[in-house]
Amino acid sequence: APLAKLMLPVLYNPRHNGLEDMRDFEVQLGTVIIGRYRVVSTIGKGSFSKVFQCFDLRRERMVSLKVLRNEKDCFDGGLGEIRMLTLFEQHDDHTHQRLRLLDYFYYKEHLFVITELLRDTLFQFYKFLDATEPMGMRTYFTLGTIGKVAQQLLATLNHLHSLGGVHCDVKTENVCLSSATRREVKLIDFGSSMLPLDTHNSYVQSRWYRAPEVILGLPWDSKIDIWSLGCLLCELLIGEPVFGGATIGEVLAAHQAICGPHPRALLERAPREMRKMFFGPDGALYILDPHGKPEGAYELRPQATRLKEHLEVDDKGFLTPTLT
Image 1 (cartoon, rainbow, N blue to C red):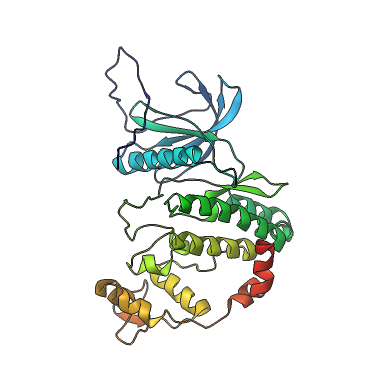
Image 2 (image 1 turned 120 degrees about the vertical axis):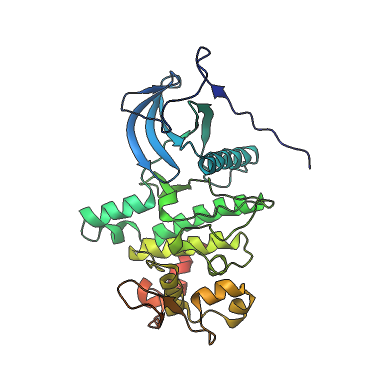
């Protein structure tokens, strides 16, 4: 296939060689970046980047400005996000709420990505409701609201998957409200997204949202986004991860507690070293050298339960608002 071209503006002082004294890009409130973006507040920071609310002096509007860390993996992830959002823009079918890419550039040894400014993430919002209002989360995240959120995210994922992409990190921290009153949301953070020719490894998806085939080192495709979306929707209803756990072994145990034993055919297809990491010869789940106990292998015996008991609603009641 012919190569595509991404034009990355490199902004610099012509009287400076571009090398910086410090590895990190220090930002203070009021700082004006490239003479255009005035920093108003800090939105958040993670392993790969920091995000700020800025005022665009040229367009006179608030925007979100992401500064990627000065490391190869961070830079690659930032370029991947630019690539994916540009692809979305080129193939916009107006059937979904997409995150709007506004600007990007390289400055002082850092990659900057500017997007539209959204509201809180779903995680921040439901934690705020839970902490400030009795039954506040249940009042807002009704089955109707969750159904509307599901419809919007399914439309976005359907479009992404039709372009050959996989988001690889769907979770409540990566979905933002664009309007709380209208229950409108947008999927964000495409830095981990992959296209068909990207190397598919086993270190994708956050632990609580990670699909079994990813954990077990099996081939995976766009269906892993749907698994994560299901986990996200359940979390909005109950206020905590449905497959929570401090380790991968505990997450697998949560899978078994709610969904039953992992299918033997699935385990038999998994690479031997991955299977031995979590399962004994009889298929029983175990954990090795747990914290606070003598060294050795300890069998995990998940207490069987049903998803209906956690959600307090049956399959039909949960899915109907999404399908109508």
